[in-house]
Image (cartoon, rainbow, N blue to C red; front, side, top):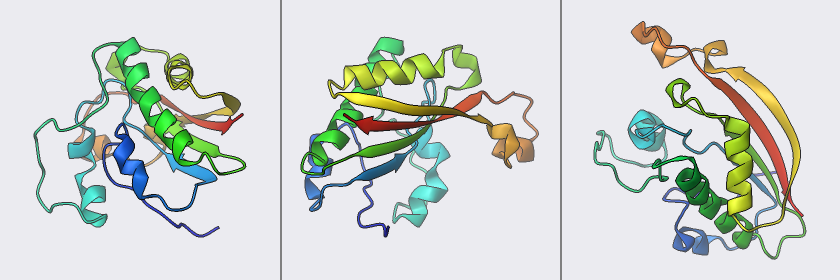
Length: 162
């Protein structure tokens, strides 16, 4: 299945999705983890590869609301709603999501993810949840920087619009 459309922008904005000409049937994403307030800055190299600036912008910019678990779930729910609405004419919509929390957040990532699906107002069916272990399994930037923090467990979710 060839990639037909890549979006870059604030996925909470309905306008971002208006440029999609064909309804997606599969979405693969990894939103900012709960408690991660520097997502754009931490991902600047990936952003640069997608045509972003060659310098790091340290302004806050548009982000998911990290003002508490409920605010975050509501904010992320807007993203899931926009994705589902962009695929309204598609017979099926499967979404694969890598999600977690930063270790200091002390939040149940699975519960928070499910809450965000409920907040979307879309009838999602959780097909599977798998532990993706921790970011320690791969080569972490923290290892290179000799940071002593432990990584939290990440999860891979497969959901389908019912």
